Image 1 (cartoon, rainbow, N blue to C red):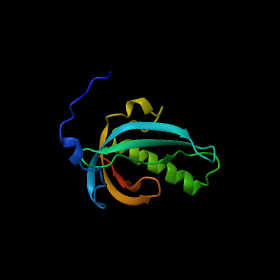
Image 2 (cartoon, rainbow, N blue to C red):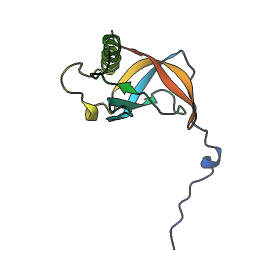
Image 3 (cartoon, one colour):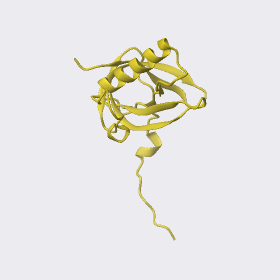
Image 4 (cartoon, rainbow, N blue to C red):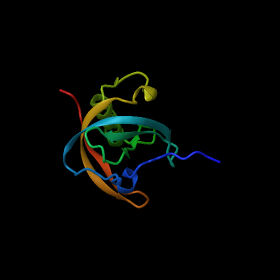
Length: 133
């Protein structure tokens, strides 16, 4: 026979995590960061964020494609700029090796948006990373 755990009455009324309003600035914390290869065989990173001051906010991810040889100059500039803004926002080095394992727990500020995801419903997105001044 297994043991029973008393969970009390609070679970029945637990609120569902939700998105935070779009267009506002929020302090984010990196929960983890995954690296991988996309369907076109290009490298990317995908940090998972927590909205620091909102206990009921859903966690969300942001796809950051890394530059590759098949990009034209405009795409390459955009990819480097997007990565630089992310790194600066979270106080990470902007040259040398990308410290994937050291990203967890880092905090930074961003303006958020909202998108509809077929699998997960409404999700927050990054509109703009804000670099510290």
